[in-house]
Length: 334
Image (cartoon, rainbow, N blue to C red; front, side, top):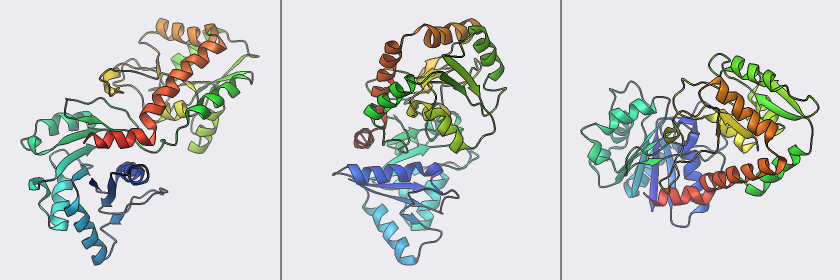
């Protein structure tokens, strides 16, 4: 099977990461990523074709690849939403191929922060029946499928996940006291930093066993290092939020942290391909009483063995979702 990943500039290079994974780990799938232009950020894996800068010979190669592909997955990155299927139309004009009326299996990938609006808009569009599947996601989010024929999507950046290392790192951190409870808000008012700090104070933690650390305005590289040395990570307490978790939470999970966040709508946050919802993030609830109870139960009451057992379950989930084979299996369903 041949797959073409098409995007304006490949939001966060997610589609290119997928293409790289499939070429490396699948014997039955070949793929290439084709974009209008180079992405403005520095990523380790580049697009196969950037049509804005490649020569005519390369453009013809890109066109031939699309023509020979069995599946075309295109990222609709443009807003406002009135520009329906803009990426597909512009690619059709650029390559001289009528993609919307081709016999290819066409799939739309909906990136960006407006994915919920995108879903409602595209799913009710008159050309909906021409699209084989819709894929929904915001870079690292794990989203539920919206109907039977659609699929959630997750990013490839972290599929070097090792369950053994994940558990080893967590056990190693437990050997070093005091254990760090980390909170790094992107926006203190939105992330509920004041409420979290107040509850931590009420826990009256023994400083020889626990230290609460909250940081703001630090470089991302420092954020990652802080998470790698922490045992607990509190993402946000925001009862009014929609959905579950984002990049910060996933980074803390991969750094072997027992991770907390406000999870108001699990079905919009992650989806188990068996058809059941599951959540590797501990919900902080929607009240101060629940917030206190959850943190008290996991931080003060749980034994080391109980914490390890919980992390083993999280590690198994991550391995299922973020292994190279899971990516291959995912696209084989198309």
